[in-house]
Image (tube, rainbow, N blue to C red; front, side):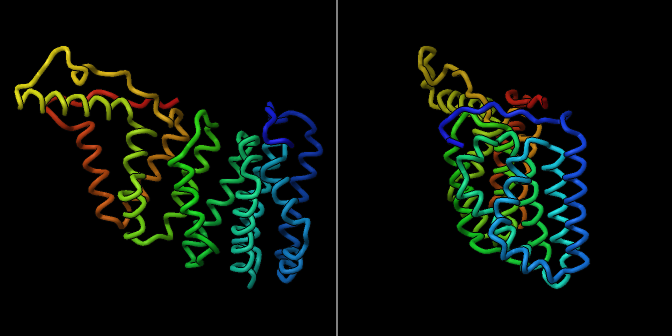
Length: 289
């Protein structure tokens, strides 16, 4: 696959039903087999083919039902069927997915419409690790790279890929202290970017316009021909579908969780944009598609 080539990818949902069923049953059988012989996990992880087996199943496979079954079975295998090997397998899978993530980033763009199950598995594994006080490898660097990706996002972008990155940033932030959350949310302007660019660019522009107009009125410097008194055309929000909008709000929630400074800033933004002035603020009333 050449990352510079353009590909039209379609899910083969209705084709080859028998092969899909056989593959799904094979994945379930693999999970049961490892549950019966948990020591086989260590041998499996030593196999060179496992990385390619993983990426073929959860990213490259044309059949959505197989991708979904694979991600579910790998999650069950890791969290419930690897007695005594859970932490080892969990760290391995998270690290391997991040290696795939970094190594095949261009291919991830090509297969962006297929990426939901890849991100689903990685995010669920991260959440399980957090809940069980297991710290994955290189978590700080992965978070740094993820925030950098969001801050330098290239448009247009597939909704599944955007949702995946937003959810991944959310789950990586679970492991951070309040000081680190403040660093990313305030010092790195992530909260500002999510609100002003990802969710509410029209409301932000309207608030800025009203603020400038009020300042000019107070200073008695109002000029009807001044460009500052003309409401400009707002940019389009980066998040325009229900799945991406929900993911962006979830990221705001985790930034404000156990971090008072971030929570205060989010509260100030929402209050200024929608509850300032005598009348209810107009602007972005997001239509969920």
